[in-house]
Amino acid sequence: MNPGPHKEERPVPHEAQPQPADELDAEAVRTWSSLALAALGRARDDIDAINVYPVADADTGTNLYLTAESADRALTETFDNAARAARSGNGTAEVTGATEPTSLSEAVRAWAHGALVGARGNSGTILAQLLRGVADVLGAEPEGRQTGPGGLLAHALTRAAEEAYAAVAHPVEGTMLTVAGAAARAGEAASAAAGTAADVARAAYDGARAALAETPGQLAALGRAGVVDAGGCGLVAVLGALWQALSGQEPAAEAPARGAATPATQPADPCEQDEDGPAYEVIYLLEASEAAVAELRAHLDGLGDSLVVVGGDGLWNVHVHVDDPGAAVEAGVVAGRPYRIRITHFGDERRRGRGERAQRAVVAVVPGEGLAGLCAEAGATPVLVRPGEAPATAELLDAVRRAHAREVVLLPGGTELRAAAATAAEQARAEGVRVAVIPTRSAVQGLAALAVHDPDGSFDEDVVAMTAAAGATRYGELAVAERQSFTSAGICQAGDVLGLIDGDVAVIGAGLPETAEAVLDRMLGSGGELVTLVLGPDVPDAVAERLEAYVQSGHLAVDTVTYRGGRYSAPLLIGVE
Image (cartoon, rainbow, N blue to C red; front, top):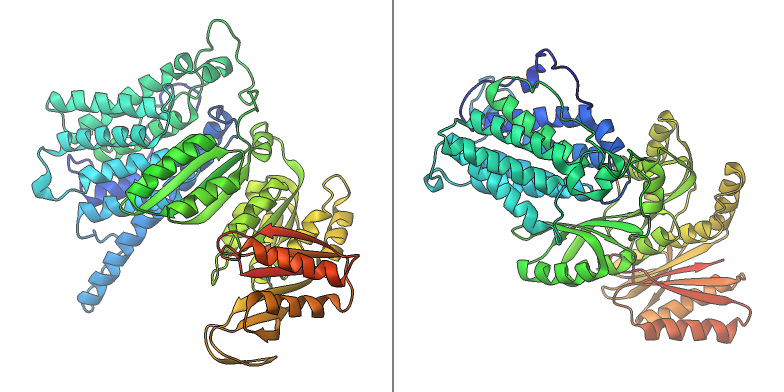
């Protein structure tokens, strides 16, 4: 990424071969997407290395790449679906995956939607909104377009910058937003001079490069480190891909990764920055109305910083840095339905930013937002699951990578996840990470294992101790029967409360408190020192108080701890150690 001599033009891979044309169609968007993904892939490590703002966590290049990858995947699926439809409608006629979708609108909206649902980090979330702004203009019906291809593209870039600024709670100059704004202005100027779409793209690319070079003088953190803005660097790569897609010419040089340090300072380690900011990054997709999201923005703005909320039409991507991740997730619950929740502890990310790996980390699969926050506060990387869903191998592997440690203990939390956990562990080992999978069958067993975790001891001893703690924890769960069925405890009716012990139905009752007491009697019959209660979102505190008193009255030497499982957790989880 460092500036150097102009490169000779290189052929573009066949699947992304740009066709010089002053036309914005679905195929041009597909080529732009493919070239942008390739450019971000080449620049990924260099962009990570200069990531100093807003958090020096060395992941901006990675986040931009993963966001672009999700967008490109969605666009490719749109083309593939069109190809299958055409194939089925043409009998024996040969139809390839290059078949164009029905419209430019379909292509750009699929591209933007893919970026929205796969957005990672601050930079990826902003990129998703930039693509949404482009889609809002290019995706309009032909009769709604008031200008030719050059003017249309310029308008799209302007809308993209405007929507990106609006999505950020407190815009800061010297960032990706500044670069987007400069690109839009340059594109509008080229359009006003009757420029073609390729001319507008080239002007936007050049304007973005010039603005990027100025960012160290606009933002103190960049000036001290002697680097340009990492997110802006990625955006320049995306705009270079746009020009290449429309002109057939490869950008002559990559964007410079470093700028001049401010006069008062010397270039510094990009990762030496104030660590007094919020401790966690929280990201989730949210299904909610615009009115609810407006209230959510105001609430999250009071909880932390780096707030970015992008999307629309009922689906949003929420990104914020906070000290209380549980509160950020609960705010989403109030606004609508949050899912794909990711909570990252910046202590681990800052180590990554310094090129360091933690010696050991824990990845825990948990069925509840409250439990996810609890595990994150304990230093683990949580993977949240919802009822009826299970994380795929790729999601578990991603969590192991995000833990960024030489050694990882993986707590799958259910027998149905063991195969996926074993496969993720095998792939992580191939990448040089030592991984141990502890066969936890319930979240309460995971909590027991996490309680004895010793990151400073030997790996083998830690795994043995955590495995022993999990194995010594009997687990129970209360659920409500959805229909009449046969169980190991007899026939249940719809609406009955089922008390499960170690995965089997042991008690059938009419009410949750009474059934829970019966389950506790059986679980404590063989002894125990600690009872863990995890309450579901609709269970009142009075139930916990009743069960705590019940345990105390019959087992004076047994302690009880209670947690809130939060949304997606079972009505009641019970652990007895």
